[in-house]
Image 1 (cartoon, rainbow, N blue to C red):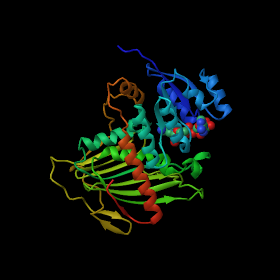
Image 2 (image 1 turned 45 degrees about the vertical axis):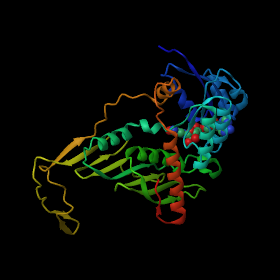
Image 3 (image 1 turned 90 degrees about the vertical axis):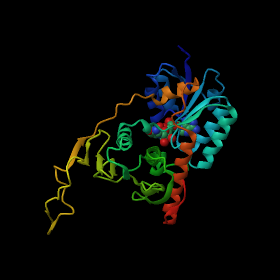
Image 4 (image 1 turned 180 degrees about the vertical axis):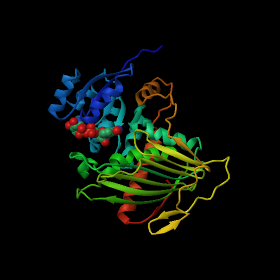
Length: 352
Ligand code: NAD
């Protein structure tokens, strides 16, 4: 058994930098060796937590004990720090969104390839239970062939009052939550994107989008509605999945929701008309209980490496990297296309 310990230094010890310590803790082969932040108070927190603090980024990069640099700074400086760290011979994990543009991301990957170092992005929401459950329902064809999905996150607290409200720092909700939902979407189908329509919202009057809605069509016929909102006092469900044989709703991260499918053993029974407002309707009546099956949402039984277990395994040549650079690149191209569709108020027909 290999007992090598890999030392990681955290650059940017704010909310997410601190959270990475919790993610790393259960992984015996990675140890947080120290932290660096441009704000003194953050360094004090690092010291209090028992970590070594570095006086500068250079001090991190010249420390031969550092094997991996984790970048958890605001988005605008990810690229520069990543390239410097790779040039110094470090492996690099970068928070999402990795860069503001796909071109900047290509520049990082080029350096990683030249330096033969591992570079990856912390797209942690690929491990989220709600996403894994939705993917499992789709892959098992519980709903028959999926033809439409809706994936949303909605809050009523606006954009957090920090750099996320500022364009220069790579703020805005498309880059913030959007990158997660779009990354998840592209894991659900192998099909190429055919068209993208989008609207960004500026309800809060900040210089960056406080949410967006995007309608994306795929070459295999799948359609997707992806939505992020920060002014939603009443939330719509996290996932809504429609297939040829049934529908699933996953209301929240707690996996509340249900699946209703056609009962293959019972011939279709005409629903009884219901009173709807000032009229009667059979079309919009619920399907008869005898001709449908109802299931609770069940989380899939998946034993998989965590993000950090996978990273160690990749360093030791035992696993493929979980978050692949070409996948990250595709998501950035999709984000750029959403910005373009929203700015030009047009449907962009593009193979992505
Ligand atoms: P934050 O503001 O809480 O922390 C950022 C820290 O970086 C601050 O302490 C700041 O002083 C420091 N910093 C700024 N410039 C620096 C520099 N040049 N060198 C060193 N330190 C610097 O922000 P956050 O919420 O922790 O977000 C950090 C990153 O993590 C962002 O890219 C964000 O999108 C990402 N993030 C990811 C998730 C996720 O679920 N994957 C969740 C939250 C944030």
